[in-house]
Length: 126
Image (cartoon, rainbow, N blue to C red; front, side, top):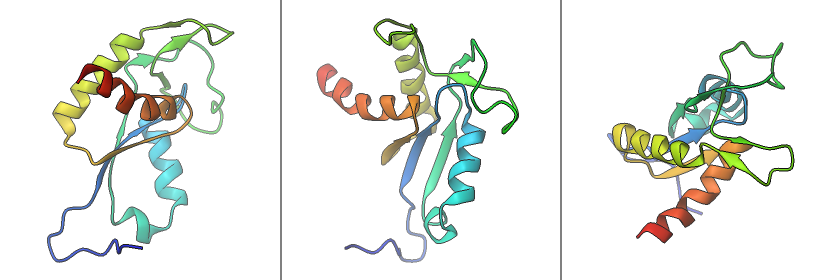
């Protein structure tokens, strides 16, 4: 296995972190940085972004973490129809241009859907 140790001035791998449904970048930061070993997080450049849309309903983390809460996109109860997915993709593209370059994506819950889908969607466009 390769080493994460880099030389003096070595660039840390940069990841765009996409939070879960009705949470926030700050909540994900607290969950990751607070739980992962400091030896790991110190070697990574983690960028925690907020989704573009304010939460349209109650968050499951209400009472545990303070608002504001956000959604990447919205969907119906059967998860068969969604809204604002194209706007979400455009927002993430803007984030990648403004804050990047990134070496990878990391997501939780709704953010993991995007982290898994984005490489495939990029392939379709290329």
